[in-house]
Image (cartoon, rainbow, N blue to C red; front, side):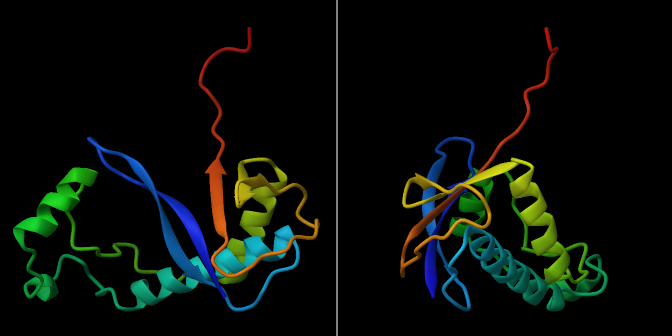
Length: 147
C-alpha cells in the first residue's frame, strides 16, 4: 500500500512541504499499526542504505562519485553538499524503533494528521486508503523559564 508522506524540503531560501511516497506492507487499522508500518518502512530503507555504505567512509571508495553542477547547486540550497554516505553504517532494529516511536507518540512528542484530520490515541480505529496524505509534526519544547 502506498501512502503520501508530507516532508519538509530543507533549504535556506525556499522551504516547502512536498509529498513523498512511502510503501507499507499491509493496510493498518489502528493508529499504532500505522505508526509501526511507517517506522518499519523507514527503517528498512535506512538499513538498505547502511548495508551499501563502505566500512570506512574515509576510504578512497568514493572516487567514482561525481556530481554535476545542477546537483551541487540543489544540495547547496539545502545547506549541505554530500555524497549521501551513511557514516554510522550500523543497522537499526525495527522492533526497537517501533517501540520508541509508539512511546514518543504516547508521550506527545509528535502528532499525526491523516488527510488533515488529527489522529488521537494509538489504539483508535482508522481507515487508510491508497495515496492518503500523512503528516507528522514533531512538537518541541520552547526554551525559557516557567514564570
